[in-house]
Structure formats: structure tokens, C-alpha cells
Length: 390
Image (cartoon, rainbow, N blue to C red; front, top):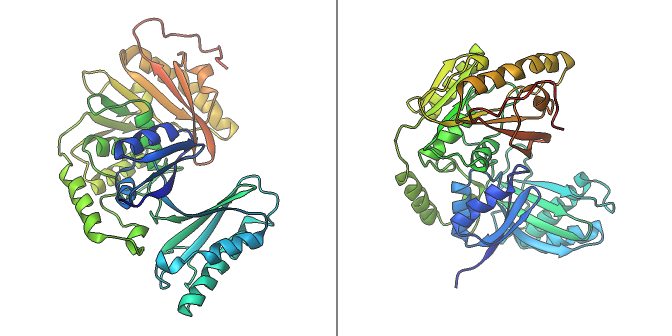
């Protein structure tokens, strides 16, 4: 009988549903959706698959202990009582993080992290007469404590570097979108490689590259290393078999994926990332103002963009002038397309001149955003730009 392990996969808030769908495809059991992530259970090899295949999870955390608690001494004892030497070597460096939700009985998350670190080190000393070193910059093992006012859960991070760090981003502009947010949005809107995809404000090409990886069936974790490779339970032969199978499933087909940007620097950044990711033959770039955009192919498709948000007043005024021009471009030239704008600027609805068919709350880091959907059906979509939907 296979041993069952329990895991938690955090993700950008708003993408829990698509992450559940991913985990179901991978064969996860006991799936439980919560705000900001999904709990699940399965075999050790399922954890490998989740790290290898998930486009939406930020990390895969392995639950190693869970107990009720009242005092900080209880948390120290919880860490000290776990036999960490059975999980990883004392030669591995460690880092402890604490996430607490409305927990008034602790002095600070930082102090609790020190207590957990002390418990881990004291346990190693009891067994090995040696303690692991702390490395806050690039640790071998990340230990994460999640606290509520009564429950404490300890996780060992199996991923190491966050899963959204795919490795292809060699150039970025201002405030780049995380890769798993882009991939999750593509899943959320139901895009498939059978549709054309066009990002007229492509920046460093995150949407485009994530789409190409989906289209070519490239597992996002197939070309990187993970923390689980330094854990006691790691089976290198099993892992390499899964990686080999994932690479064998890749395809070299060409798909209709296009991007443009008005900024010369953005196009240079995008092209550098495409070249590094080896997608220069799949993704087509052009320097162009979004208001002059036309469908890049004679087929219906998806317009998707993450435009500037406009923090300062002068920026917001400039955007207010651009929104109706983007709306006009969509109305006049993109009949039959679906258009999506991810933005934290809720004023977009006042000025686009189009009625949003859907607005989905999402978070870009800690910034609350909306994903606005516009279905460009010929006739009936035009609105006066002076109105508001709010």
C-alpha cells in the first residue's frame, strides 16, 4: 500500500479554481480549496508531478506536522519533537518563515521563526551533536509555519525556488507579471492553442511565453532543480523517469501567438526572453501602438493584455485618454474576438466605450486587480464613454 502524503500548493489569489483542475488531472486526492491555495494528498511521485507540471502553483509544501497550540513554548516543542534528520541532512542550510492569521497571542512572526529554528537545531544536536546552518538568501530547506489562533502546521517546501521562476526571464521591464499568474489567467479564460493569441502590450512577453509553453506541452519544471532532490525520501531514478516522459511529450508545432508593444525597450526585452526560451520561431513580435493594432491572422482569437495601471494622477489622465482608443480598435477591427485586460485601475470601465461581460477579481502580488472580459460581437457592444458600470 502506497504511503499517502499531505501537501499544500499556494497560488495567486483568484486562481484557486484552475489550480484545483490542474491537481485533479494529476490524480491528487483529498483536494481542498482555500483562499490563496489548495490542499491535497497523494503519493511522493504526485509531489514530483505537481512540481514538474503545475503552471499555477507558487510552491508545493509538504505537511510534516500539525498540532493545536496555546503558547510560543508549544511551537518550540512542536519543532523540537519532530525528527528532522529523517527528512534532510544536518549539512543542509535552512530558513524558517512564519505566516500568522489573526493570532494575538504571539509577540511577532519573527520571534516565532527564531523559536522554530531553535527547536529544529536542538533536535539535530540531540541526535547528531551538530546543528544545521541558517541561510536566509539561498537555503537548501525552507521550513514554513502556518498559524491560526489554535492550529499550527509545519511545512517543508519541496520546491525550493518559487515555481513561477521558470528560468526563461532574462530581461524584464517595470513591475513584471509573475509567470504563474499569466498561466493561470490563460487557464481561467479557457484559451486553447486552437485560438490565435495576441498581446498588444506584451512587455517582457510573459503571456506569450506561457502560452507557447502550454501549446508545445512543455512542463514548466522540466529544466530546473528542486529542494526535494536534497531530501531523504528523494528517488532520483523515479524523478528522471518523470522528467524524461515530460520532455518526450513536447511538440515543435507552430501556433498563432503574437505580441506587440509601443516601446522599443519592451520589444528588446521580449525578444531576449523569446530567444533564451527558444520560442523565436513560435512567437511573432512587432513594434506597434495598441491603438493601431489589427488581428495578426485571419481567424478569431484572444486579445490579452496587462496595461499600465496609472498610480500617479498624470498617469491616470493619460490612461483615461488611451482607454477609448483601445476600445475603438477592438470594436472596429477585432469582431469575433474575446478581449481581456488585467488591471488595478477600475476606471477602465468608465472610458473603454465597451461593456465588460465579466470581471474577475485577481491579485498581482499584493495588488488587487480585475480581469475584464469584452466579447467583441459585431453590433451591440458600443457604449458612451461617459458612463460607469460600477
